[in-house]
Amino acid sequence: MIAYLKGEIIDVSEDNLILEVQDIGYNVKISSSVANTLPSAGNIIKIYTYTLVKEDAFQLYGFLTKDDLEIFKKVITVNGIGPKGALAILSVMSSDELRFAIIAGDAKAISKAPGIGAKTAERLILDLRDKVSLEDAFEGAITKNNKPSEINNMTNQAKNEAIEALVALGYSASDALHAIKTVDISEDMNTETILKAALKKIN
Image 1 (cartoon, rainbow, N blue to C red):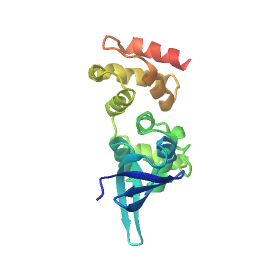
Image 2: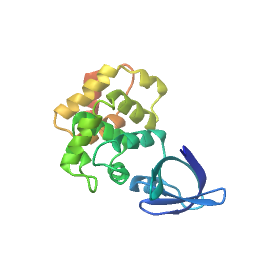
Image 3: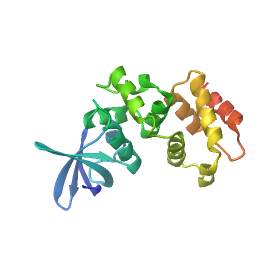
Image 4: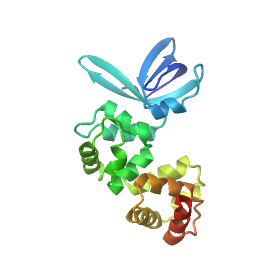
């Protein structure tokens, strides 16, 4: 309905942004992680939006990237998780961390979000496991970490095996993601070298 808004920040609270676009002030619901990332009032920003229309409400939800918007749209399809719950999850973990948690079955990490219990987290994992991919999570992590573009062509098998090995060793999906993101990966690195470098970062 409204793909994005571009305007001046008027006010930011923990869960709400007031954005002025052509003399109209929009209330946009945001996660606390977005609130902590936004610049101060007076700055111009572009924010991607999801529009919720009900009989008694018209609400906008805002995200700094299309990727965050897309994962939000997937999360709200899960029974028992509405927009408020989805924002709560994205307040405690990034979209990439959420993908890793879903793939690794890490309900504990997801249930750290306020209002999201263990059963709800498990339902989210069950519903979305086939709708997210490890490759997408790595591509997003690499892109956001400003890695050279040629690394995007690194063998998916090596990346998959490295993250699976970390999870098998008992590390959470979030810890595994952080470790991989801090490794300076080159095209000649195989699964073993990536894993060793990641373990050094963790330890």
